[in-house]
Image (cartoon, rainbow, N blue to C red; front, side):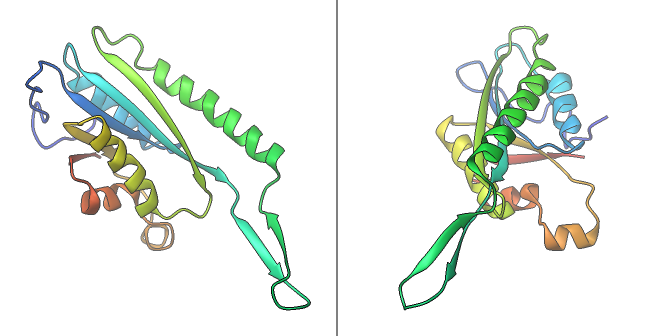
Length: 173
């Protein structure tokens, strides 16, 4: 079960509902977030379910010949990117369906597409900006079970959120 800091960690919004951003990724750690939502949801909550897909290949340039001439190419073809986005959309729809049976809770999906080389701080900024836009009461992210080397080389979006967000961040572990 997801461990949380308090029994009901998010106080009700003055309007009677809570705006909560759920930051999903494609790891098994997202299960923690979905369990948290199932356990701690309240009637009238608005769950803003966000996923930042790292599918767009970055653009590279090869310089050759006279100064100022170069050839641009992308890591992935446009067809490969479109296929990756379609697969991600299907995965995201399936994840959101897992919360469809929650009574009197509104689920709003947000799917963002980012470059494959995007740092955790860039992903955290997207999620933090969404939280600011919807006036979120909190962001729920999952603590990843990465090795020390993976955390060093890949980073952690949850850790970046903790250091950059203007909104309370709950980390489900």
